[in-house]
Amino acid sequence: MNIASSSDPKTGVRVWPAHVRALEASGLSRREYCRRQRLSYHALTYWVRKLRQTSGSALPPALVEVPTCSTLLLRRSCPPFRLHLGPDRLLEIEPDFDEASLRRLLGVLQQ
Image (cartoon, rainbow, N blue to C red):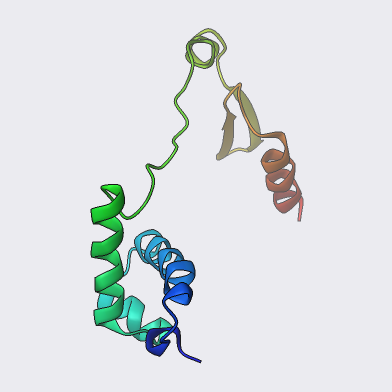
């Protein structure tokens, strides 16, 4: 059953907020999101407005990582590692690098 035509109000309360979040995360226009998801444009617009009115915005504020003083000091006091991979290839690795990503990158470079 298409949720856009569901007559059960409880279904809408459970399902539409997830679509509003997905819409905002997608970067698509409402019309394009509805086309791809086969949703009613008018129903989605209703829920976007309803959620904005009840919470001030459709989504809770996003959490972003804010660098701490120790992270900033580490970057300033420790120069990046420099890995020469050949005459014209240089890989600079910051002190706070992600080990798993570096392992994956080195694995790709070895192939």
